[in-house]
Structure formats: structure tokens, C-alpha cells
Image (cartoon, rainbow, N blue to C red; front, side, top):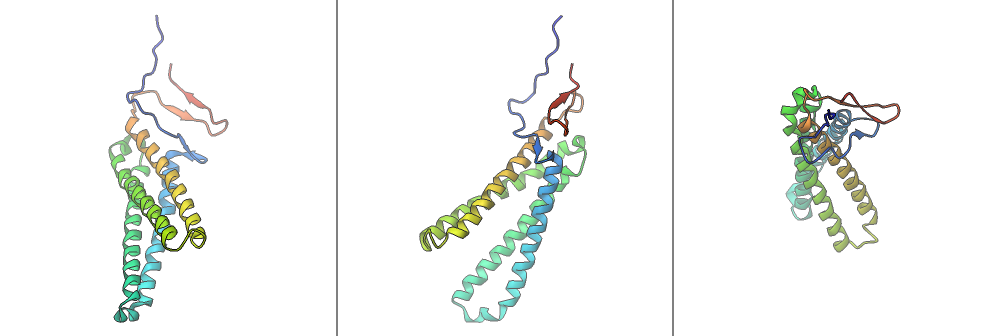
Length: 187
């Protein structure tokens, strides 16, 4: 008699199974909290700057450009905060309930990709208009932001895959935090 072998139902597997020192669910909650706090601070900052410079809008010229940049920043921070809130919908539930709500993770993944493309575009603009040496600090900050964005996107996408492949009837795989080995109750 042959032993039964577990065969995954999908050709792809989760990219990563842990986010730093916690499970993917905890990592997605942490990512959502950080993104939410930073974007709420961004909304507040852009709103304060809009109010502070409001008496200059009548002069036009460069102030119109500044107003456009601040309006765009305010909108982007607000959208980012909403997308961060959507991360909590599946992450704050059990995996069985979150499986049907995994699509709330997609706006974060799409928005993060669009944001990273915008930062790459701004980096290219800085290099071509200001010069590489003058824009080096800003470009380094953008590269750090892009790297962290890719890491967060991978974590959220891995959690999406985990929820997609989750089946409560199948034997579960648990991850030991002591020795980081995969243990399974499969036969």
C-alpha cells in the first residue's frame, strides 16, 4: 500500500511564509498600521501646508504649481490611507473567514505598484532636471522607499496566496517560531 502524498491544488506557492519574526497575517497587520499612520500624518501635513499657503494662491505663477503639488499629495495620501485600511479586512479575521475577503488585499498591491512607478518617474525627473549629484539624497530616499514598497508588496501578495490556497479540510502546516522549521500534521 502506497502512502498518500499531499499535492497542492495550485501550481504556485506562497513566496514567503514569514514577515520578519511573525506570521504573514501579523506582518500584514503591521504593514497596515505603519502605512495608515504614515499616510494620516501625510494627509495632516498636506492639509496644514495648503492652509498655510492659501493666502498666496491669488498671486498665481509658482504658487499654482505648489498648490497643484499639495493637492496631488493630499489626494495620494488619502487614497493610500484608505488602501491601508482595506488590509485590515482580511487580516483581522480567521483564515477561514478571510479566504473570501482576500480580494481586499488587491487594492494595496495595485496602489503600491503605481506609487513605486511614480517614485521611479520622479527620480528620473530629478536626474534629468536637477542633475545626478544635486538629486542624490532625494534619489537615495526614493530607492529606500521603493525597496520597502517591494518588500511590503511581497508580504501582502504572499498572504493573498496563503488565503487563496487555504483549505480548512486539509492538514495544516504550522511554523515553529523556535527553530523556524516547518512542521506538519500530514501523514
